[in-house]
Image (tube, rainbow, N blue to C red; front, side, top):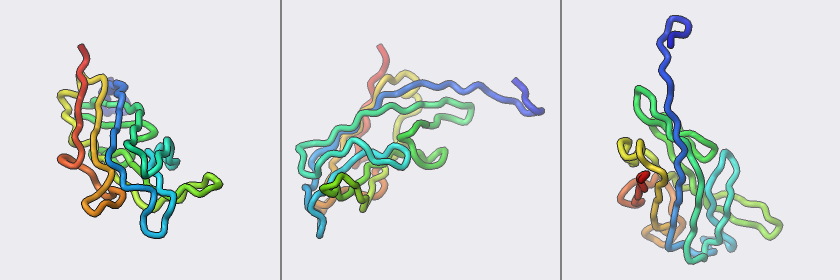
Length: 156
């Protein structure tokens, strides 16, 4: 298809179920903070909060995988970052008794490690990681393999 003298290619979009499983968690206390929780960030909002002393944290969400002539891209309300550098945020914060959440750090789960060829046939992906860093604190910064293990489930 040509639009305004430029060739346009149709994008192929597929929905991908994503499950993030984090264990062990660092606990509810961090420094002066007493009620530490972790959640996944949807847009600017942190949702699905899990207490920092839970046995494990599980987040389930859907993202769109977009195939273009330039390669794959990820989209959706949980996807952050610019094209080619997309990631999911796990956000740490203090959950006040009144319910307000004050974020103090985030971990970026980098999606670039997912195999593009397998994603063409994937129905789901699971990321498994420790939510505690080497010092036992809430995990933060960019997270790539081997700190996260991505397991792709292919369509039958």
